[in-house]
Length: 263
Image 1 (tube, rainbow, N blue to C red):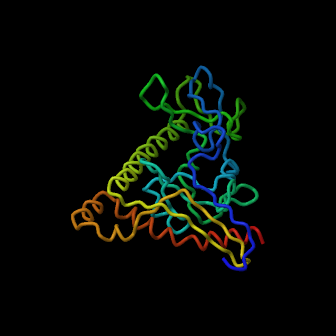
Image 2 (cartoon, one colour; image 1 turned 90 degrees about the horizontal axis):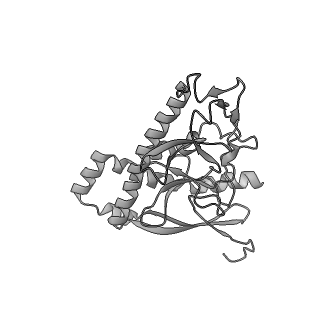
Image 3 (tube, rainbow, N blue to C red; image 1 turned 60 degrees about the horizontal axis):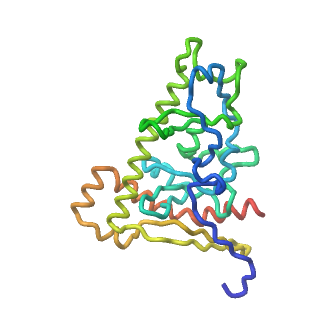
């Protein structure tokens, strides 16, 4: 842009915040399989903040959330043959614009299920093809002993009602995650995704660029056959696609949020 001397750094959308630990899911640094012999006294305190998400400029999203989140965050797809959907939360590395300084999610905005699931997660063990419920022992609200918070196991070593609720949430999330992954793979198969880079400028002339992601090609989408449109409608995919398009109008609001933070 002529006359603009501000440096532009292109940030790449990634599913992994920690490049030094790419095998660990975003947020998780010490996941352990829940075991009553090892975790009999484990408790989970109420999460009074979400600071663990403060340095994530994007988080995974499932298709079932698209409609709720479309009015808050741009929704895009990661690159690759099996793309995931992510909500864009910031325009710079290590910055989430939707948390305040106390680590609270901004009121009135939907908190993605991936964030709400923490510190629990399903993990597929190397010697077992079944998913196993784990907990991140590094989470600030996971403690040993005491009476505060919720116990993970009861006195008989059985899963507590709290743990059962977490398990049900993770099971539902996993099902939605697989459906979203299948949607992404379908978009690839039908050649409906195209790479995109966003270059934005705020009112003070500061520029922000975000790349490494894909969006649904609107022109190709409009040419879908009537049969495909009907099939997508029945499967709920049409709602997800339209919500995706609506969400892409949130880029200017993201710039405004960025400018408000920087002053």
